[in-house]
Image 1 (cartoon, rainbow, N blue to C red):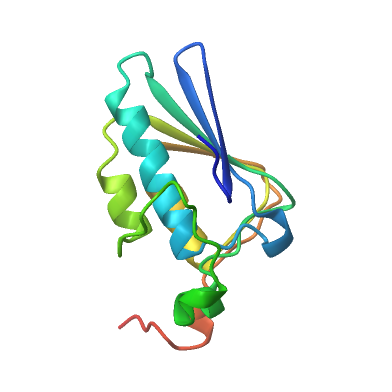
Image 2 (image 1 turned 120 degrees about the vertical axis):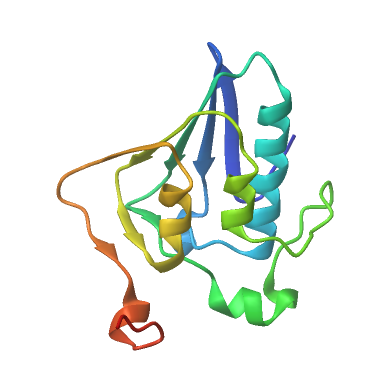
Length: 143
């Protein structure tokens, strides 16, 4: 299967999914979410796969949601092999039933937390930034 924004590999019962939108700091689009849903469904249905390893290309693991693309779907690059559905990244990971490991070697920002919170285990370098700008912008408030 050819994907626009992710790469996948199966080796020794391990399904590796790599975020591959480095030029946009791996910010996810509706197509990215649907590609991940498609890939994880195939991994879920494959009894030869025992674990998911989630990685990312580039210096940023994920900069969150590509807001411009979510606001204007015409900016997205649909995958002709997948019909985009209105699904959330959290929902995609909730439907995955195998152990998962996020290997984080770059910063995680905003919606990028949906990836790591969806995994069973997270291994991260010690010098990374984990930021929720929504809090500083007062989009979300804690009482």
